[in-house]
Image 1: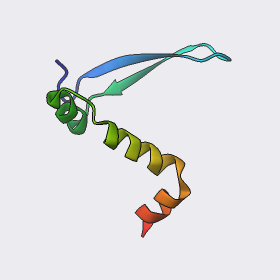
Image 2: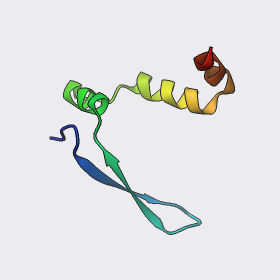
Image 3: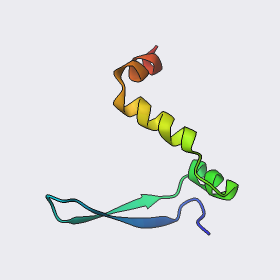
Image 4: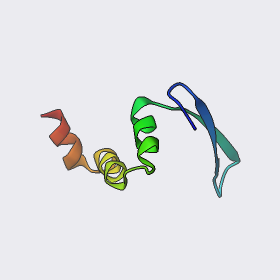
Amino acid sequence: GLVVGDTFDLTLAFEKSDVQTVQFEVTEGMEHSMEEGQMEAGDMEHAMDGELEDGAMEHKGE
């Protein structure tokens, strides 16, 4: 399994550009999720909301 500090490559293919490989480093939070046997969908959705919704960003800033 992956441990904190390990890196892994994720290859992304975009329609209008070349294939791009991105390297991720495993963080403590990711390790915990993997040990649980699943990435928690709620956490992912919450992170996405924070990036995409202005309201969520404003709430974080308070």
